[in-house]
Length: 283
Image 1 (tube, rainbow, N blue to C red):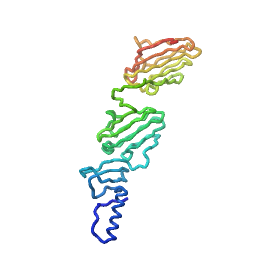
Image 2: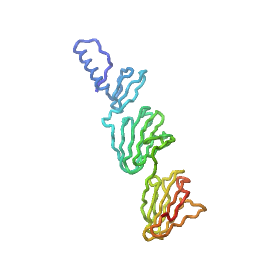
Image 3: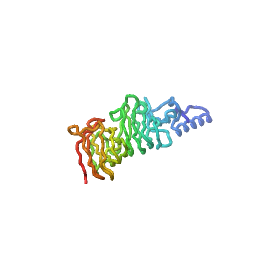
Image 4: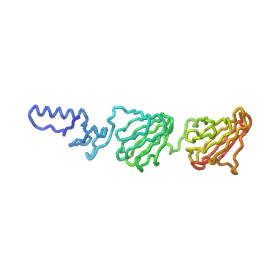
């Protein structure tokens, strides 16, 4: 680690040689140090070992611009809550595990040149949580589902994220069909349904059951559940209060052995589903 004023003073040969060696060391180490060089020039590089960042003096020689991180690895594995700071610039976070939060340092600290990528290789939802009242994509948080990734960047006042191949806030034209995989719900006395990961669901009833209120629904989204009778048949399903039906009358299931009924809903609110279609005894 070395810094220099980039001026070779007149002196005896040995002193000048030592000064040149010191200057060469400053060049070779990018003026590295815990504090900024005392003498600066436009475009002067500085390896800031305190912030673990590579910086460059601006063209007016009035401030420092962050251009990179000093971290040796650009790929970091994570499995629990962590904070993203300036030293994480250009880092790819490969996240595993279940659901947890990812917090961010203040955007003023991250600077307008900050960017990083986050890949959800886990089974739960990652929640990106900006500092204090700051926002990301105009909201207080941003959720990343399993298998998704985002590129996060700052503009000095807020965070922004592009998700997978398109911005969710934009109109998108898809070259291939888009769909949600069918998820088999666990058959139990009280059947649970998570709208976030089980938008298209099915369950085979092994007894008289209760369908609990859906969780994590999004207003305006559509949800579907296929209800099947087991080999015995005549199983009943009690719909909890979250489910709304025409005239307030819940449908009665087909009772034959292995009968199949399909029910489609639109989320009226984040906690209520209105039935918009049904097909009974589908064969």
